[in-house]
Image (cartoon, rainbow, N blue to C red):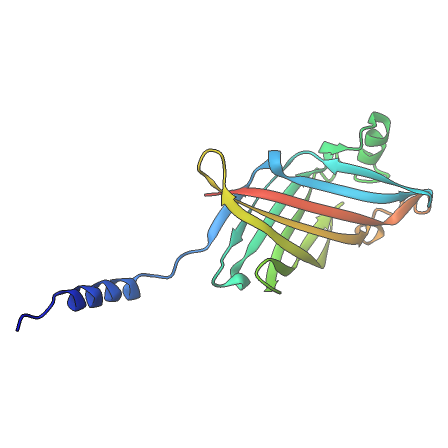
Length: 192
């Protein structure tokens, strides 16, 4: 009776897969064209003013099997502030607010990711604004992972949270300009 070689081939193939190392986490470089850093702050207690920062860089790492290994690092140029009003932007760049000559960047560096479900995380990290670093914990959403138009793999993350600007030494004009600032950080990265 002739024995089939199929089971032996299957066992050999299975052994090869078992001996392969676990897949590494994927690192994404932030695409500044598809990144947004938006803020919303009360003006005179009667409306909100909005603005954004237009220049940034950074990376994030996603590890589907070990989400505790996820991380993100972002650097934003404070001089790129844009509220669609040149006079207001100049004031925001001054010593009254961001003091961009002294503090040209603000940064976020994660220290931990806690998985809530497949798309939602609690991210803790160090947020540095105006030369002051505070630890914050923010909700983050994995918006998606997909293919770009040049066959590259892209992924996007978004976080919406509120800070008190006075915690970062930005305590001028509190009252006319709110102390609480809502931040939306939305980044898209290209897998490296």
